Length: 367
Ligand code: M6R
Image (cartoon, rainbow, N blue to C red):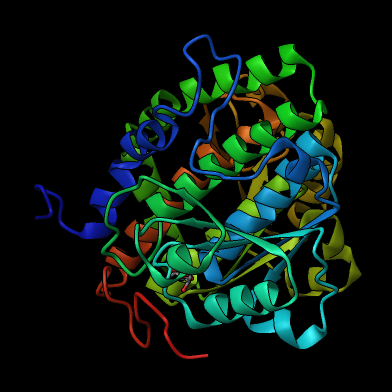
């Protein structure tokens, strides 16, 4: 069932181009001008009545929700908060009938996420579930369901479910924007057209896996490392760090690049690997100056940067892994792929059970 791959995780990483296509199929018009999400039963009036959005999820799904916040705020201009489900209920969130609560869960069975969904409904909010399992508890109890068509995910480390959740957020962001009139038609077409390129762009990264294996081998001898980025790059940094910890047991921390100098820079010492995500053009200059701060303290910096920006970025870093360029908001769907492969190969390098890391379960049904 591993279809010739050594592990489910690797198989699932390679299934991502298909997962993107399947999640978009039938939802994007042929001319790339609009999105239709027929499974969502909200009327235009109901969409116009949404005053705020709460995104609630755990682990990797939470990291998709961090990107989802930026997507919805940028595209639909509705304020969004993203919470981890185990914290959400206990902070007395202000849930009103004009709040849309989006729960994100691959399995649709995560106890904390389900409890958050129930709390949201008790308070009269409408709940949208983004899930990979048709008929799961979360799918059954939510008002609306957006299925991610990633297919079954077996490895404990989530890969194709995460990226399909990103695709679901992009589709939903456009859906809101076209109902609310918050994006020009040209901008909508630009996003949907760029989304069609994502599967091939992911394939191009997958073809570079040998390079990423080398990176992973060099990282696997370290006890500590950092992932840094700004904006959605920071959200991807958090996902990269979780993935690496989960399956390689190597400690890493994800930091907002501009926040390092407020304390964490003290931990940077000679030779420490820093993986810097540098995909957001508007933020290049700022991120590069943060990279200089860690370089000056001896860090070994690997940049994940857009093809075409090599000249600008490579003089500030030790190594550069170029990824195909997409729109800034879509870049997480490409930039996370090298991080998944680095984690996979690091786990192999240290001799771990990649698909079944210690102490963890695929579906967490206790709070
Ligand atoms: O099934 P869910 O999406 O609700 O699961 C949430 C987390 O338990 C899950 O994403 C976890 O963080 C992954 N093992 C990370 O790779």
